Image 1 (cartoon, chains in turn yellow, brown):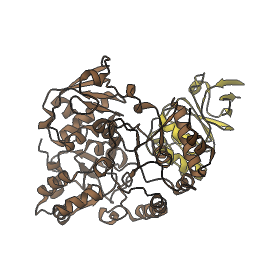
Image 2: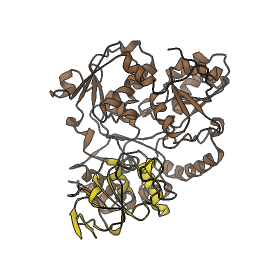
Image 3: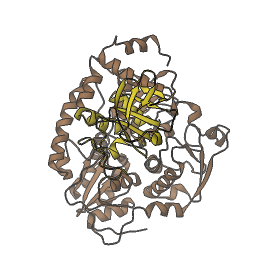
Image 4: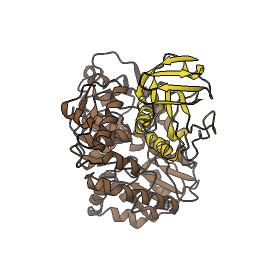
Length: 132
Length: 413
């Protein structure tokens, strides 16, 4: 059990499995809203983000990203929360638009310390992440 | 974030659920990036591609837009509600888009969005003045508005602009703050910019974007002979290859009367000297082979001015096209070209005027069997080559027009 702190970009609390990405992420480039899977071209293509907590180094902003995320949310294929090391405006706006909890600036190297499949509890009021 | 009494009431729901949601989005967004307050905007430029359910939520109980003026960006993904058949895009795609378009339209009409459907809103009346705050989508529109007009917009996302249109506010951060608008990269040209054609100017812009990234730039030796079309061609590719938000031109743009003003007295982070080699570098990324077949020629990234349409018409006088030709322009500008007698020349040759994003963003569909696309725009070439799967060639207006006539690429460089 390990606890880390971050900055709250969008509040709310959620529990779930982590999916950890090694590279900056964009919904339009890397996410298929029909399936919830990472699209081809991404190193871990085919893995699903649906219902999981997305852990990534940051975003790489496509203008349409928030609406691709929105489509995923409506279809039930979107991630349920986002943890990223450094948020750029578009990934933050995506989380705010679909109103899922999001933290950034975490006090740990999340991309290496959290593993895909780890069970995470995210408290978006206090900005605390607990990994078990 | 410190809010005014009225903003607090908006956030508390006193002005209805939609206003509350829009205000909540903006305050969260602003807080995430260090904004301490919201500021009133002079205008907004919105991308009318909102999911209908999101639009319903955001406009619930909203009686009027609080932004004084709101124009709209082009239709997305090569969909034009009136001209998709002439464009030859797949009917199933167009059918799905038509349905979405018709679901959104009542919202935009009820709230009086000015449906300009162009990526150059400055040409059709969205002309904020120096120092005014605005919220714009469209990286080219953002760069031109920041640079040529000296009005201030961030590189906004689509939902944040919708929220700004509704509330009339935007978070005070980023490129709205004078200290973030100063030039970081100084560029000197080894050639005379006014002697270059539009695509060559675009080649310079495309190279600059790849070197500058998200930094602001200043050109120090471009003289004031450049036309609006030339400045547009130079600037617009910068946020395709990079993410440039402000491009000052010494002695021409409003925040760069001296190099000291443009740099804010700081030392430049980088100096670039550019000439023919760098122009060639851009062209080599989208090369054509003489004689290869071209299926589609795309003009209008960014949308053409009336003068540019006159120029294309002059080259097409009495000709018939073998390749498809799509020309992106605002309806209002097209009207000028019709009255000037030149739009019909292009249409008789076989060209189609459209109000879509000519770069095909976000995921443009093309007529079946489209394998090679030629364009005079490096921004279009950048996105088309990445989004369409077609081979993309970038050349001058003259090269593209003769290619559209013969159906085969012929370089004139």
